[in-house]
Length: 474
Image 1: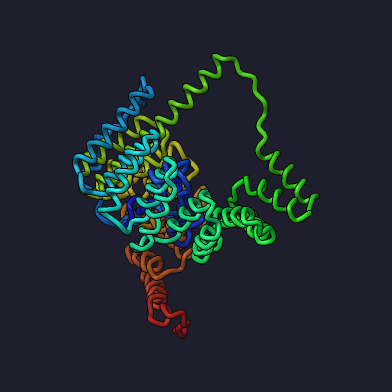
Image 2: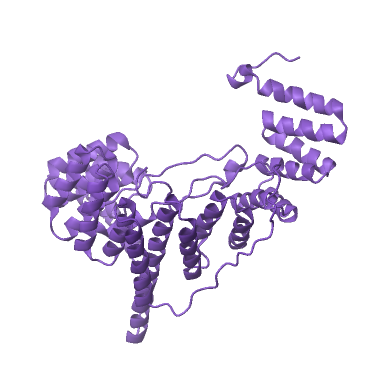
């Protein structure tokens, strides 16, 4: 597993998956120069699925009360204090794991964010020595070299990474960007063709290919590549500017004018008159915000490394500190919930998810997470309310019906349990839903209905049903 490859920050959570099961997805993150290098700190994120699908019928934890108190917002933050804190965290991580490339990577990213490219480069070169097949280290090292005006060395680093078996798409993309900048356009185009053979729907790579072809004077090919980039989302706005120049070179003056106007409209910003005091205040706020962003990303990466190494306490401290720095950080709350779930600390996870659902009351996925975890934590009232909220948001959410049926069954509320189980079976007619319905009917004393539901479950779990063949009706 690559450094920063377990999770991807900010992935959308698809509520529609409640009805038929979550499906995880991976997005490809490509790096192009040091301008986007900080994205490496944000490669950890979320799949489009609920956090937890434990059996809500399991006995709840014996201790349903949590002593966890989420931290209050941090105060008196300054650029210097945030930077000092980020370096203290990253340097301690490196001291704790001096030969772990993921730990060195966190410190390297922090140096890059502070524009200390030489130090970042040295750390990434050490990461490459420790893990030569990890593409992210070579990509970032190359970006740091380019920013120092050492493009030819960047090419060597990237070509070595390819020879070492690194995941090729990101490396080829960065290689193409460097070669393009160096004027080695034929090689840049070849590298981009390699990327697009793997990911033919990458708008960014089609744009870079069109830009490269335009520089080579191959305007017809450039036009086709740029059109393809604009068909895909999101394509860089600057593609319109390049396409305007290409159209002009092809003698298509009307099209060129159209693209220039479109580009101008997208880039135009309303004029704003600022006093010197306002301008200074805006700069100070922007710099403070950037320092906060870098600090949060550093704490997040460090916490992830500590979690992987089994140091739960240190990971928890960093997650809670991140929450103090950004009390509305929903991604950090999700990370903290996962940390507690990994340790089966359901009551603490429930505290975190209550805060998360307060921030996102219409997020059906998080409501479902809260319901299932509250059931595990021995809090049926919270679980029922959360399941009901899911069904308010999405009436066909089979998993919410299923969980509610389990909850009512365990509470002895068999009439309500039967209704919920029937709804679960209606929206998702699986063997499990019919087994649950059979169990509820049996407990309620309706053995005829229980037998019918069990027979349906048996048919759905038969080899013929599993293979897609329809078994004969009995």
